[in-house]
Length: 415
Ligand SMILES: [Zn+2]
Image (cartoon, rainbow, N blue to C red; front, top):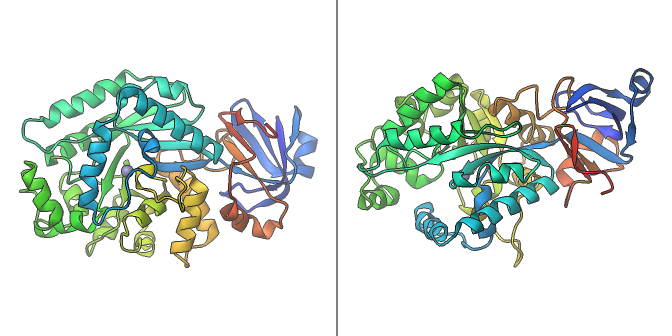
């Protein structure tokens, strides 16, 4: 099949005017100009017309199962105030509510151009049924928490591993997610890091998200420290340095680690993350919901850290007036552009595509239109100039006009 479009935005090379992408099965065979490719290629021609054709977006952090909590939790005063709110909301839900919520979120992402999502699973029992029910590529990070002595970290990890091994799937896969430094015991971090290295698995964790978490690890004090102490966390791992240092101490830093948020850095933290090849995910709307200090993009990029974008969950996304928000990577890209006037549209698009692919171990296979990459593409309407293609992507509102995943139309053009 040959897809023709007014503008092709391959991301890993400059935009192409009057371009074409040649597909064979579920792979991209060639990307170039229409006059060049039409002579060599054969097969069905699909002219997408006045669109920008670009790689499907990679949402590097999401909690699909919280989608239907949209608008339910008004922004709290502090992050620590939010933890009991989400815990109570979760406890009140049934299995079928979680399943509905997960699929609702997957549908929102699909319509708005995400083709790959790194999702945190609080309810692993939903898998693999929900995987089968969506065309998205899903990397499901199985959430592990436990701060009390009676919850043995070995047992928590063993349970996750049994789940991973019981979930073979052609398009989706599972990996490990110790929830955060404050919600886990150090032994779980060490065991997870060791196992992930041995089995070549990705790890995802929330890191240095709030000022209270930072204060807890740096100085063994503050609202989160006190609250967790009251909840039987032993807290002897606090007062020894930043949350990043905490992960370093427990051998968690590495190329397979995806650290989400990283909103607060101590001196030397960015360098440490860069040296170890850790990937960082920024979630712009969740960031705004909690009023975190400005995201330290420059410090992290200068240290060589690979930065990606994610939606986080709708439980931490503000309402728009009285309307509930939706999961939408275009909205995240726009929010980021609004909050950081020094970041270029091209950089933001890279964070939502190639950088996310690198973080998830999909470099060269997703997040770009390139020879041998998977046929994961989306189209958005645009009749503008090629020089404005990146701005046009950032300005896009609403659903995409077409989406293909693994060589099949997930949303057919004109459909
Ligand atoms: Zn999260």
